[in-house]
Image (cartoon, rainbow, N blue to C red; front, top):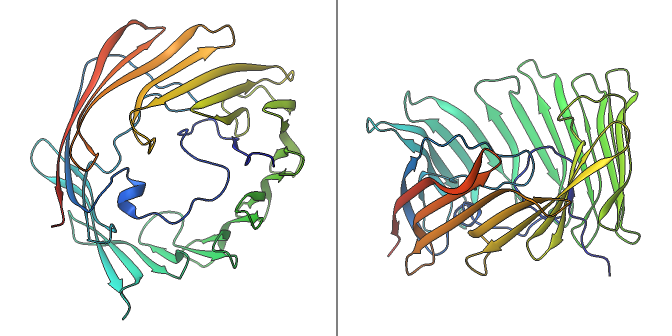
Amino acid sequence: MPMPRRVFSSFLMIAMAAGAQPKHRTDAQVDGFEGAIHTVATRAEVAPVKWQQPSGPTVVMPLFCRDCAYDPDGSRTKSGQTLDSGEFVGEEINLTRDGLGHIIARTRVNVSDGKIIQQETDGPFGPVQEIYSAGPVARSTKSYDRLGNLSEWLSFDASGQQVSRSVIRTNPDGQWTERAAWGKDGQLTYRETYDPDTDFQHFETYDDSGAVKLTFTFSHDKVQTFWSATEEPNQYGSSVVANKGKGDFDQFLCHQDGHCDVNHVHYAYADSTKQNPMSVEWRNSDGMLLYAAYYQYDFDAQHNWTKRSVWVLSPEIPERTLYETDTRVITYWN
């Protein structure tokens, strides 16, 4: 049986996603926590080091939910950051449950002014409608297939006009087989298909006239063909990242002439959950180390880290240098 497709056509990503849609996880688990976590308060100290994250798999992992709170079921009820002044900037999340205790709605409120940011209505598989108080999108709706996989996502502006539409087709194994998106005028912006039996992926983006802007095919762990109408940098689809398993990722940076530069990224983890990397090393096709991050942790009894130190190196920082020290205070329910 072929491995699930794990190719990503974005030029910037965090290399922790997988091909099949994941099983349901609590907000606390999504944020990287274990156990019945109640609150987390994080303090980050970043050294004056000119470190720049390379475009592709993430080397220095960001802090997810710096100052947050969760209910006993692991649902997020507060999210944001406490400034040096002591002011909290972020949102409170009010949860509405049905008679069986299932969450059926969320209301996100800006702590600074008390105004509603977003209202979300949930169905059995996840959010089915989101209403926003500001921005180009005023409302969005989501649909799911009978297995609970997201199948369609529609966005609308304040006048009710459709802004975008995305569709995802998924097989019974939870593996996507088709993904596509349309813009405000109904113009197809990208489409990709994947055949798990042949391990073949085909991807295309389109310009405003409907002409193909960029296309590639991928199979057997490498880009087979690539074409682009321009050499425009950082195009959606010009960087292809493949998860090869066991912490190994290949990044293909492709050019208009069809040539692709290949980088190899390896993750080693501190625990079996693979939430916390011990090291991330990024090498070119010749094996030369270009970027790296090395981590040291203090863990509590629930296997959540309470202190994290990160050292980095890059072409501009040839020696391993301390970049960031993070500490956090965690409380648990009962």
